[in-house]
Amino acid sequence: MRLELEVFGIDSKARPYSYVDGKRVYLSDGIPGDLVRVELKRFKSEPFGIVKEIIRLSSSRIEPRCKHFGECGGCRFQHVDYGEQLRIKKSIVEDALRLNGLDVQVEDTIPSPRVWFYRNRMDYVVSPGPKVGLRKLGRWDYTVDLQECYLMSEEVVKIIDIVRKFLLESGVEPYDNVKREGFFRYVVIREGKFTGERLISLVTRSGSFAVLEKLVEELKHLSTSIVWSINDSVADVSVGTKVQSVYGKDHLTENIEGITFYVHPNAFFQTNSFQAVNMVKLAKEHASGGHTLVDLYAGVGLFTYHLMDKYSRVISVEIDPNAVLSSKRIKEELKADHVTVLQESAEERLSKIKVPIDTLVVDPPRAGLSKKVKDAILRADVGQILYFSCNPSTFASDVAYLSRKFKLLKVQPLDMFPHTPHVEVFGLLTSL
Image 1 (cartoon, rainbow, N blue to C red):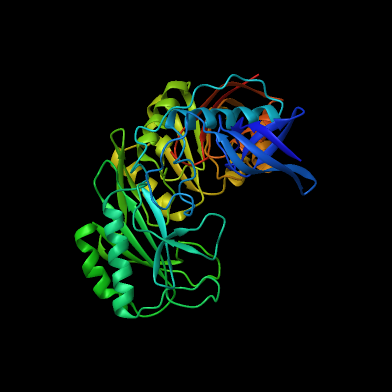
Image 2: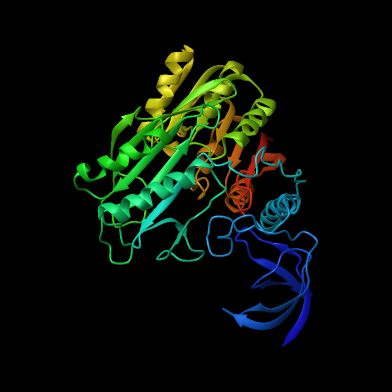
């Protein structure tokens, strides 16, 4: 069955869709505004439109900047005008809320202050070839050998070229993710966008560091710190269980709104420093102030230290020991005696707090809040929740679960990752 359909939207998995007889039908290609001719098939018992021809191009289509677009999995919206990207991301959040029965107005997406060279961290795969780059779209076993990349900084391609040349000349064996053999696995680059620092992690399996000494020398002029990270796991991850500083400091510093944060090579930090500024501004604007603030999933303390002046007592909870050490260092430097930094899971700590909590800040991983945390929130005496989420679906389901005791007053999307389907969400909830 062949039909002409107009592409209506794109979902959180970057899947374009239209409607047939009032039912959503996903399509193999297209952006909002495209008129396409499709062959309707069934996939997993659901209708699916295979696009045979784009009859009329959307006015939102633009020429992708990067020559790797369409093959590389790093940027999937490069062919979409940035204003349309922001509208798509708002609709993704609206969809998630609607599917969970939440009827709340969603604000327009806050654009990223930078749409190119905005990331402060990139994990580049090292593969046989040698290749240094990112995974091919939809493939875990194929690496796109990058010749250009506009996500982080202009110096990144120079670093990639140096690593590739080193592998060619040294005979050091790249890791083969299929055969699970080889030595060199990842090059992880982190940058302090407001400090000018750059930390490079050379991620390998166990072996002799001596084979990397020449590479370290060649990278020094492009970095302030270099670490050697050892990962012997069969899992395809870019962090090591052992991290050794081989040049410069053993950490990166970043400054957000006047506070310097210390970031361990393995620790989480908001990936778009420029948009992190807007996250802090949102938190400051909506935090009520009062006696007690609890910051769950606190990381190195981004919200802890920017909100601490509004509260008499602050409890900062984080399970990662490296992030906790960094947070304690910041606490000492700021002389924040009313801040308590705890290395503990959110589940464990929240159930122990018996005093009223004026403000609870949560910024969980993509999986969202566990049932144990949500139940603990419902049992606790919490005045308001500032919820930051990198996953609109889990954000919406969590808010729906909490709605028996809390009202969702504000939903604000932020574009943390231009040219991708990912969107950050801020939600303000108050106790009923």
